[in-house]
Length: 96
Image (cartoon, rainbow, N blue to C red):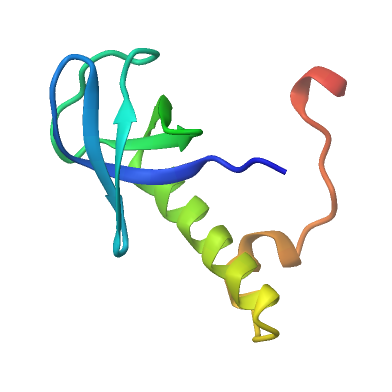
């Protein structure tokens, strides 16, 4: 399984950017989305930024990844998915 990771650009140029999430820093390609300013949240997949994220979406993804890590460690994780616990499964718009 492959996951996209939300990261924040801390420096960059037209081609690549140094991004961080927590203690991790990684150089990623910007070729798919173009140059972005410092502070931009991006979704990184296989060392390529595939799209920009707004603050709320980046925070939601961070909580989900933190919840997944907690579950894998055998810790409580439900708090990370509070927005999903009280609702049933929903079909995407194109399948309704």
